[in-house]
Each structure stands twice: as structure tokens, then as C-alpha cells.
Length: 106
Figure (spheres, rainbow, N blue to C red):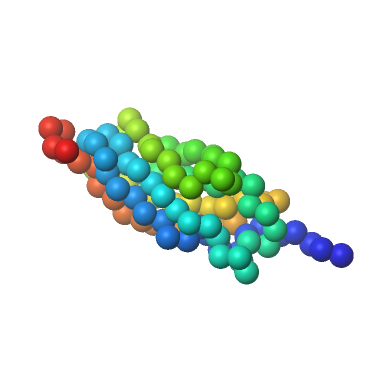
């Protein structure tokens, strides 16, 4: 009998880059095979400001490995965290810190 569980690790290789003064481009890799514990069905992306207040959350299908988050504050630090979901949510990744650009800069 096969028991499916939540992933025991978050997605790998999370990268976040500020693309404009109010947006961030986020990419990630799959959860390591031995840590998946089933078929990953979706990913959850969380964007928190420097006060750890959640400003944005997105849920995307498992085949999606990138996301652009817009309408953020300019020249501001953000913490990006992801988790994978099989039959339940796996653990959150460590924060990947990124700072949006200043207005007028590209």
C-alpha cells in the first residue's frame, strides 16, 4: 500500500529579481525527487514585506515554475517563500530576499 504525504522539502533553487520599481520575477526548481512524497500538484508563492506582513500570495499549477508579482512598493525589501503541495502543503522555503528598484531606475 502506498501512502502519499506532503512534500518534506520546499522547491529548490528559488531566485527572485526585481524587474521594475514595482515588480519581482520569481523562478524555482522542482522539489528534490526523494522529498516529493507523491505528485506535486501546485506551488504556493508568498511575498512578505520587511515587517513580515504578507503582501501577495499566488497558487500556480505544478508545471508553472516562474511568476511575476506586480503592484509592490518601490525601493522596498521583500521576502519570497515557496511551498509545494501534493495531498497537503509541504514546508515553506527559507526567505529569498529581493529589493524592488527605485522609481525612475531600470
